[in-house]
Image 1 (cartoon, rainbow, N blue to C red):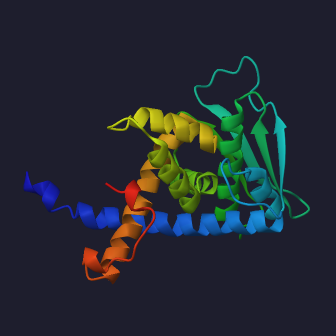
Image 2 (cartoon, rainbow, N blue to C red):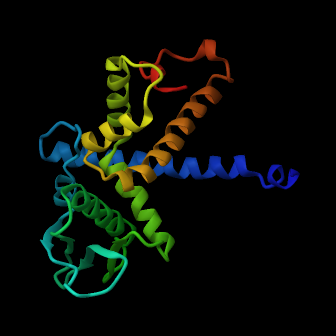
Amino acid sequence: MREFENLGISEGVEATAKLYNEIAVRAENLVSESYASARRKVSFPIDINVVAKHLGITVMKENLNLDGVVNFSRKLGVVTSTSDGGVRIVVDDAVSYKTQRYAIANGVGRYLLNDSKVIFKNTYAIPLIPQSLDEIAADSIAVFLLMPVTTFKDEFLQYLIMHKEYPMDVDVWLGHLSDKCQITPFNLAIGYQQMKQVLCYQRQVEFEKNDYDIGRMREDKYDRIFA
């Protein structure tokens, strides 16, 4: 069974966590800049339309799935560059509010990944498995736009402070988080794992800065959210 040990899995996970952290930091900065431009305070649920407007993206809603068409995947959003140099995101108006929000965030993610291209068109659909890693990358950006790290930590901390039952029921917590962030359970299931990696990575970096001596760690009000 040593073949698992020899795969270098821990090193690979650390590299992935580092990348997610960079995505999370940039996404949080973008949300902060967007809200500052709109003279609003960042809080859940994140108004993804504020971010889209800050980037000059037009958001529209219309029926993207024709009646009678047989397809397991439902088209949720289409992001395209326009002839006048702009960008447009069209989301399906027949799906839930949470799903529409995520489709817009995914479209923003796709735009950010393709910003240097003169003309592009991308479609977001679920639930079948994506064929391109770009789709997974756009999902990562979308998650951290709708769930900025600091706002998430504040929410988790407050939840733990108010929580009276032990041990905590993780399903109840995730249901609460889904409603607070207005993210569908399907997308939150993916994003929560990425958030765990980011916070664990950030914690590890702090340990490294202090030579792994917990006694030298500065006081952190978020200590309670860590196991």
